[in-house]
Length: 114
Length: 163
Image (cartoon, rainbow over all chains, first blue to last red; front, side, top):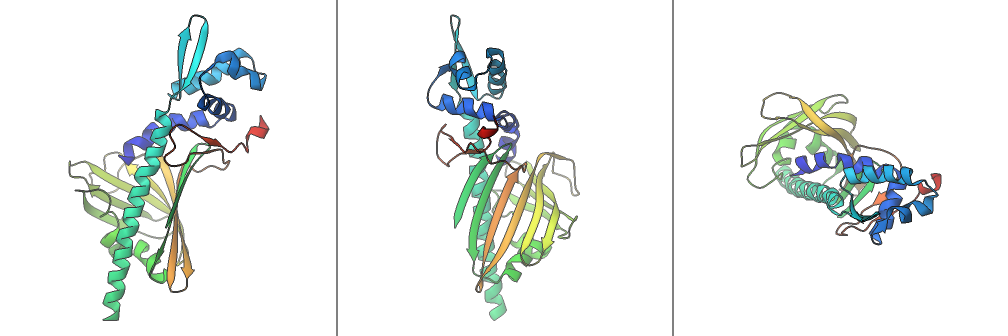
């Protein structure tokens, strides 16, 4: 339902509000990466990247897998799909409303002509 | 008819456009006259749901309330405040849900607050209606999700330069 899904989106949007985090997500759409890979393009310290990764993990946008000492990061598609579901629900709702309005306006004008 | 959806920084925007076979004064009135509004709005909400009550006070600062009861008994009550009322060209109102929604009067609302903007454009004897719905309005355009795309994202890196 529209009402529930919009509530779940809060954390997704908070995570997306930062340009560095969006760049990290963009990198992950091209495949899994480890933390050092992700830090490279920004000349950022590992702790700084880790901080962004935690926000993304908390929002459920990214999943971390440990392989010994290497942490592999993976994109999690579900929250983005929720965002799409929100759009889809409202699109259906408003299009159905427009259909009703269209019908109503036609009836109204037929009545007026009589 | 066209639909676009974009995810911006802290915001989702949905836009729909439709041409109606009626002059815009008539289309505008269908939204702002309570008796007319309840003839069509909300009835399309969801299958098996029924429109319980409609309140419309289409003045700047005035409120509206649309109470829909679903087949399973849950109430689905939308409320908002009119921000702009410019007949017959523009109507802007907030869009929120009530926590409970089963009462007869305005009840406690829950976040998020959305914003709906309606633009009525004259197209001869017809009217093009453009509806824009914003979830938490903000400015910088950043991420666009194409409908149907799975986890792929188009990043419009307008703000990337600020890194």
